[in-house]
Image (cartoon, rainbow, N blue to C red; front, side, top):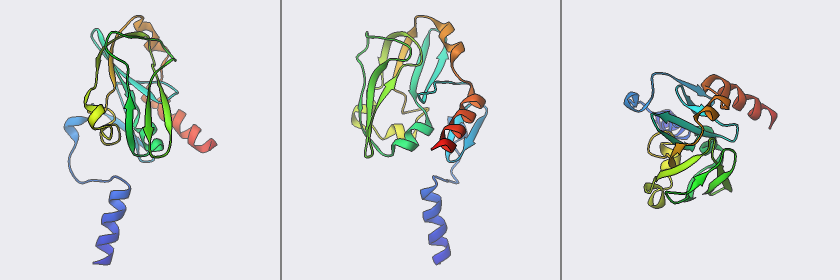
Length: 165
């Protein structure tokens, strides 16, 4: 009984679940430490991700970033219609540990903001690549995506960054 309780609490702490989430993930993902890096997305070294589909790019913070932040309690996002620039802050995430700026990995005009995050900022923790997306933009220069990291490069970047700390 004690072993089962220990295993259950350890699984919860490590975010291990037996529930299938295959419908949420792209074809392949890399799991590093206890964070996921999804294939098919682009990543900035400031820990934001971009999913470019057609004329729209969706932006959020990575699983690695939310894991380091801890429980997210407040999110400040821009209004639709505002322009964002690559490498420049467009909002902030406040957690129980710290407040961090969110930088845009690419330039563009905000076409949609995830209003669910106002009432439920914890979606960033529970679903950083799905329900926890932050903004959708119309990219001004899609070639900026080429300077971002792929899944393997971002995984290596995070491993090196974590080893240095």
